[in-house]
Amino acid sequence: MVTKLNGRALRLTSVIFVIICLTFLLRYVMNLEQQMNLRKEQEEEQARLSLKEEKEKEMQLRIDMALERERERLEEVNERRAILEPQLSLQNTNIKDLQERYFLAIPSPIPEWSDSTLELLTSPLGQQIKADLLTVPEIFPDFKTLTTQERVFKSVFQYLDPILAEGKIDVTTDPRYKPIWDFYKSLETTIYPWIQPYWKSVFDINNRKKEDKDDSNSDIGKSKRGIVMCVGNGQFQHAASSVKAIREILKSDLPIEIFYINTYDLAKEYIDFFNAIPHVSTHDISKRIDNYYTQFGGWALKPYAILASQFQEVILMDADVFMFKKPETFFEDDGYKATGALFFLDRTLFNNYHQGRKWLKSFLPTHSTYVKQSRWWKTTSTHEQESGIIVIDKKKALFGLLATCKMNDKQERDKVSYTHSYGDKETFWIGFEMMQTPYAFVKSHGAVIGGLGDAGAEGTVCGNQLHLDLRDNRPWWWNGGILRDKNKWDDRYLKFTHYAEGEDWQFETSCIKEKDKIRELSTQEKQIGALLIKMDKELKGRS
Image (tube, rainbow, N blue to C red; front, side, top):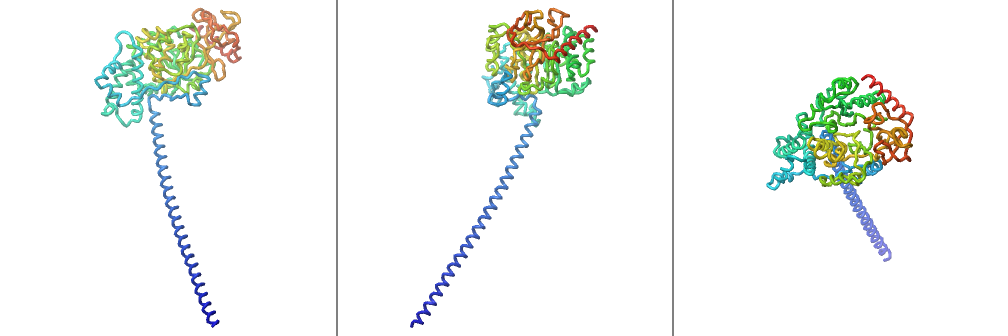
């Protein structure tokens, strides 16, 4: 009995063991199948993710390539654009650094042109606006209207410029753009009639003509940078010395263009003198600017000479300007590179001048950050800008230059501009304000170069107006020639011994009264002065 029970127990145990083994085996098989399924799912997910990643990379590559093509397209378009003003902002770190050495004129934005603008002009109510834009006053120039005309001109120009630069659309015939182009041409002719026939439109001004590129005088036709001077018979002696000094003393080969009004303005012998100097050419400006409108005379020629020059980057210098450093240094200036227009401040003279501020407020609806920093606005000086040297990149600053030229047009200068300022001087920065084009003033109100007590108060530096290079705070250039006073003496030369900074000038003797910032010229600067006097005497001896 016991044996039978043990046998049954053994068989039951065996069955249970087999069941347990089968259970474990089943679980193992099921786990193995789950792991295989999981692995398969993971592999499929990995493959899916890899495929997604590849597609995303491919898509990003396409986007990057499209962005690169667009960037290259925009670069090409911008390269071909007629005017490309710098975009300045007070939030820019570089701008904040520059403000330590410059008064930067950061413009107020001008509203952009849009299709709705043209719709307004073509509407019945817009006819009065259009009439104001496309007509000129019969007797007296209206600078408030002129400012509006020029800002609208800038707006529509900037709308058309990238389209013309890309060259895919003919705006003169395309139905969408032809009305805008026709309006633009009418406005351009109204404001700037004197650019034709030498240029077809303002869009052509920065495209050098073939005769300029083929200029036979050295590298003038090839250079994008150069010096422009306006010289008549009365300025020849100063200009001859200045040009020779650039070549023989400063050892600069920067090309120079001499502009004169017509054959009566500069004698042939003087023209021949300049043309014989390497890298110098002479030009009758009436062959480039229609003198019927401008009727050039005196200072008015200067901004137009910049416009007419074949150089894109121009140093405009008066005939009686001389330098201690090579003229190329102006193009290296940080303020110039940031804005495309470098200006210099005049002496602080004649306080309580309220007329300038009143005039600005009468026609400028908005202005740059500089205006309220200016001495004109603060009424502390009759003079703001010294125009002995103007440095302009026409690719960046052509709008401002056009407005300056307009201020020196016959009617505008005789009846408005020159009644508020001494000649062309203030028309540069104010013209830029009319167009809201950026510019930079070197943060120095001028200095004086000469000798101690030379025809002035003892212990003060007396001589001609000097401008400093704030990169090293050394003398850079001066105006007034190398005579002590060109209006008093023909043979009394400037003493090259000292220079002084200050704002309290003795106007009659051209001395700075302050004595706390008097410094001696360096040996090299004194040598340049001596060479200038020697050269000037030799030139006078030949004439």
